[in-house]
Image (cartoon, rainbow, N blue to C red; front, side):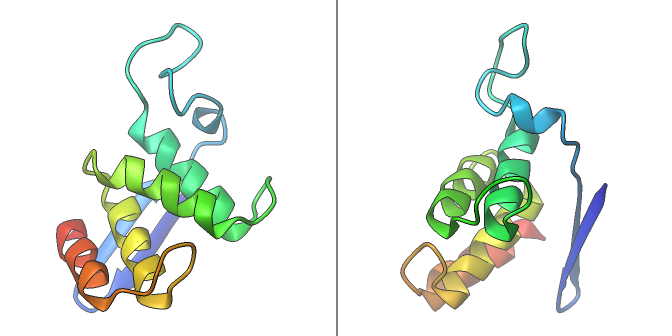
Length: 103
């Protein structure tokens, strides 16, 4: 599944694969480094309530993990959460910071 989000002149896209959502910490059944794409996918799942109960605090947690590893869709969506005050305190400056990092 391909997710795209547009903000001004910036469009952020990410592929979301349900199988990768199973391994956000270990990188898969074989172990290894954290999987930032899976972390972003979990953020999306919790933010939208897809396959799990909608939980904005949990969504922000997973978006942040992925965003700090350079995943642009997570950076953008974390910015949206700061702008709206969903799962985090409303903070326009923090929203702009994450939006800028996503492009």
